[in-house]
Length: 499
Image (tube, rainbow, N blue to C red):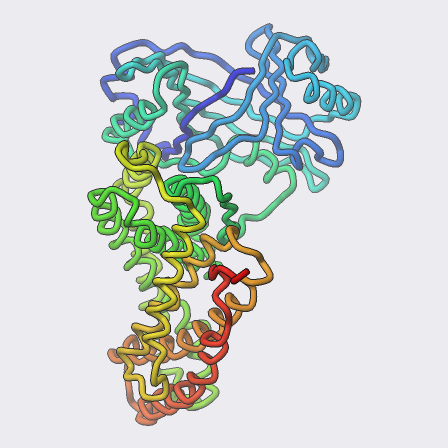
C-alpha cells in the first residue's frame, strides 16, 4: 500500500493565468493528459459508508483500477491509503491489487454489485518540482464532475490544484503552496473529488457544519490534543465559509463559522501554557480581524431574525421604521464577512496556520504532563473564575455580567474539548447547568447588543424602546441567581472521587 499525501487547493478561473505565470510552473513545460474517471459503489453505497473509493481511470488506451481508504483531510491536506494498478474495463480484481488480505476479501465480496455512481472528466497539466529536500508533483485539473441520477443528469465544474508529496517532509507541501499563492489566491479545499461526486449523485444540498465531537484519549500529550482540536475547528470554519462564499442565505453559515473561530481562539487560550508563546501571540492576533467581521454579521443576523420580531410584538408597527435600517446594515455586515473570507490574505492565513500547527513539537527538555491531570488543572482554573464571577449575581453590573458570560463560554468550550476524558454521566449534568446559565446571559447580551446596534437607527415613534430593553434586561437579571444555582451545586466532572 502507498500512503498518499497531498494538498488540495482551489482557485478561480480568472486567477489561472497568473498561477501559470509563476516562475516554478512557467520554467518547464507541463505534461498533459486527459483523464476519464468512473467511481463505483454498491446500490446501497456501502463504500461511501466505509469512507472508501473505488475508481476506474482511463488514460488513452490504458485503464487503471484505484482503491482509496478512509484517511484524514483538513486544511486541504489529505492522507490516505491508496492502491493503483492496470486492469481491464469493468474487471475488479481486488485480490491482485490490494495487499491487505482482509480488505481485499471485503472488496471482492462487493465486486459483483458495484455500479457507476459518478464520473470526473478533466484535463491535467502536471509538473515535477523540488522543494528543498522534497519531490512534489503539481497537478492542475480542469473539467467536470457528472452523475446520472433518478432526477436526471447532473454536473458541476472542477478546477483545482493538487500538490502530491512523492518523497520528503510534509512541510514542503505548504512551503510550495505558499510560494504559488503569491502569484494567485489558492484556497485549501475542504472536500475531495469523490466527496463532491457523491454529493452530486445524492443531490445533497449544502448544509452548515456544526462542531464535531472531540475524541481524546488519556495517552495523548496535551500538544496532540490541541492539534486535534485546532484541526477540527479549522475544518468547521472551512466548511461554513464555503456556504458564505456561495452566498447561501442560511444564517447558520455565519453562526457556525463564528463558532468555529471562537473554538479555535478558545483552544489557543486554553492550551497556551504548553504552546510556544510566539505561536499563541501570532495566531491570537491573526484571527482577531476575521472574528470581528463574523461577529458583526452574526449580531445583525440575530437582531433581524430574532430581535425585530419581538420588538414588533411589544412595540407595534412603529418598529417597521427601523427595519429598513437594520436590514441594510445586516446586508453590509454579511458582505464584509464574505469579503474577509474571500480575500487572498485569508487563504494564505489558512495555509500558514495549518503549516505552523503541523510543525509544532514537544519541548525537547521537558516530558509532557499526563493529559488527564493537565485537563483537571485547566478546567478547575476556569471553574474557579466562574464561581468568583457568579457571586452576588443579583447585583452584578452590566460589565460584570458580560465578564461572567465570557468566563462561562471559556469554561464551556474547555469542557467540550476535554469532556471525552471523563465519565459522560458526570459530564452531562454539569454541562447542562453550564449551558442553561450561558443561555440566560446570552439573552441578556442580545438585548445589550440590540441597544448598541439600534443607537443609529431612526427613533421617531420609538421613545419606549430604551425602557422596554431595560425592563427585559432587569427581568432576566432577576433570574440569574436561580440559573446559576445548579452550576454552583453540580459536582465538577473532572474532580477526583475519594476512595
